[in-house]
Image 1 (tube, helix red, strand yellow):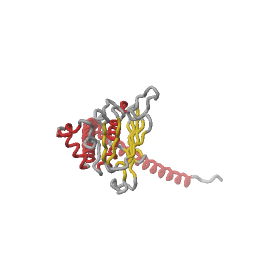
Image 2 (cartoon, one colour; image 1 turned 180 degrees about the vertical axis):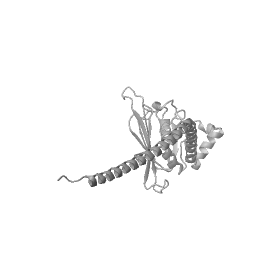
Image 3 (cartoon, helix red, strand yellow; image 1 turned 45 degrees about the horizontal axis):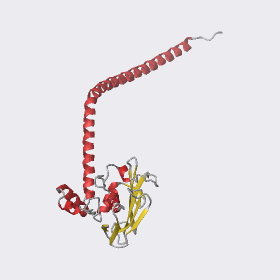
Length: 261
């Protein structure tokens, strides 16, 4: 029997896949209506389509993508096709009603991964951060949480998820994930700042003896400067008096000298 993977979301417009898992060649899937069906036999790549959507939405768990590392997402090659150097997926959303609060009729969210594990995210072709993607998608209740994509046999799993997983799903649905990310970033910054404060305090303790020594040297230097200034003034006064005495003696000599007749 054929297996159906159903994707239902009125904002989806187009999915472009290249080098992702079994998609060696560029593939473009159009979603002309609110409900679209992808039909095919076992092993034809239907689940890979769902994985590509989950991945481009920001999924970070390789386990949820049925892989062990980023390289597993890249087409590994076949008899007639060489392996690819990267995998890329772009999901295009309809934004005619300005649901994303951006002045574009289409919003294209893209993600690329290379064989060295480097990930890149794009928004309408421009490089962005994962945080930017999460913040954008949270505005329409989308995210990497698996409550958006239900694979075969996942109904029971969703019913019996752990409290933390259920919280993650609810956070995505309510658009709260971006606040969790900002909270985590703030906590990391606070932790980093506390470490810096400890380093500064340690450095201060090390510098205290040096500061005391330099303070003593500064006082001595100040005394030397004052003494030098005092001696300089004395020298000037001595020279001034000597010059005055010499001038007086010259005047006396000039008066005593008689002209030769």
